Length: 249
Image (tube, rainbow, N blue to C red; front, side):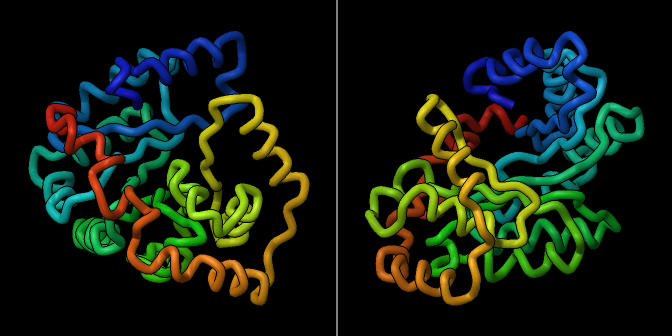
């Protein structure tokens, strides 16, 4: 969901999926609401903008605070709205996203388990620098693999900041994330050249072996040590709900 622009991305997607295309895609969106009321409203808004009667994967978005899991699973929290929507056939699978600290992801999984709930998918940063600093790859990924959850890798370039370190090329960065046990690697595409870059990464992809991965990690170790290039972890630069707390409800 793109609240900041009035759901513009969903509106565009809804138009693109008309004329028989909806059944050919796996459709995912996200909600920021932490209360049942806010989440219910956001789900209905998304369905309307996407011009569909169901969403294949709905994710609790930007789980970045230690108390976000408590709010989501509390009485009257957003999980109640999501489960009701799933029961009504409006949602197939349920997941969550976050980029701040693996501790928050681990707590989300723990609290969900305490409520007898298993997430179908989890979205998190997985890239050549994450392995060195507050690592989702080292702390969260093994648990998700064991639990057979869908793994959505994001922040391959950390926006453009990881590439600014001059330690890795775009295609190398994509090949690294693709070589992890991910279900999908999400990469933003905002111009034709970036689309071609992604296609090149797919065409030339061969899963990296152990020595190749170690070589990339050795190359990025010093630059990654302080999180300087992973601003989504160390600043509020990427924190939409901190800049817009009203989205939480």
